Length: 113
Length: 108
Image (cartoon, rainbow over all chains, first blue to last red; front, side, top):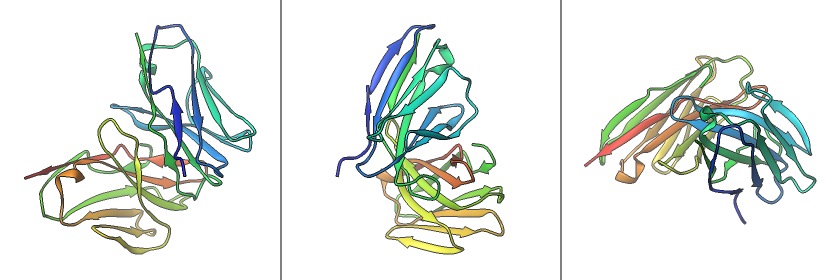
């Protein structure tokens, strides 16, 4: 059974640009969560989607957004990139969300220059 | 991580036993996870405790006390490959909330 797949793995963007990251969950998993990981802040929760609806949201500005498609695949978008957005963005999937084990993808390394 | 505390760094010797502690605020608690993360890699699931007590899985064991808001991860017969960060996370009402992680260095 394939794991959580994230694309792209590595990318470099310029300040002010926008970026879209993609995540394909484990087959059968309907909950997809996104996390930002930086050395200083650790793993910070961005948002969670379940059945195409955003069910939970962390404390990030509106520049961070996401969506989920009918096949449970998810994308997250960051607009007007700032240097501080440089981080590892991790996607995780589970069957139904809170209370279930979540499984992480390899992550997308974003560098903003 | 918000409301979760764990030591920043620990060092132990190959073959020894190490205990990594985690404390958390008990409101809205549903369960406690431990993940292992090697440098440059994604976190991988180690254990999940929802009831009080000790759960053993080979060389790794995890303990939970819900009334005390306390958990620990016990690693026995340490190997060099156990050098990694260990993340404690609890399932609150909204989402899985992670601690900042404990970086474990295993020395020969």
